[in-house]
Length: 141
Image (cartoon, rainbow, N blue to C red; front, side):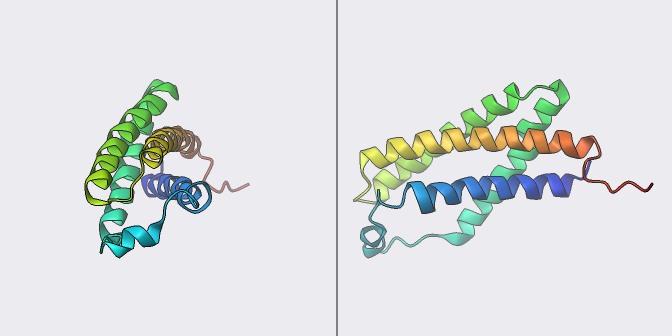
């Protein structure tokens, strides 16, 4: 299996789900200029570290365990648990530092991150199974 391809595909899926949330679903729920007004700009370096570490965990933690058992349920449950934990911590920090952070947004964000992380773990499991079966290799005839 190509571990690097597995990681890259998982990272792409995880980022895509977050882009769907931030650009399409969340667009009208938060007033970002109000957040920036308080001097709280995004820390892109930390965001990149978060995405890379979560993708490594999804691909080689949750998905790998499911590949060993040949069952998607462990990936879903592990993704759900880690997504919930990280989103609760993230929401708590936002409530402390960002004054205009509404409770509705926090609840929606926790629900979405929990769901999307579980889905990314299941997708990573499917990609790992596909890569293990030789789906990415070009066969000579």
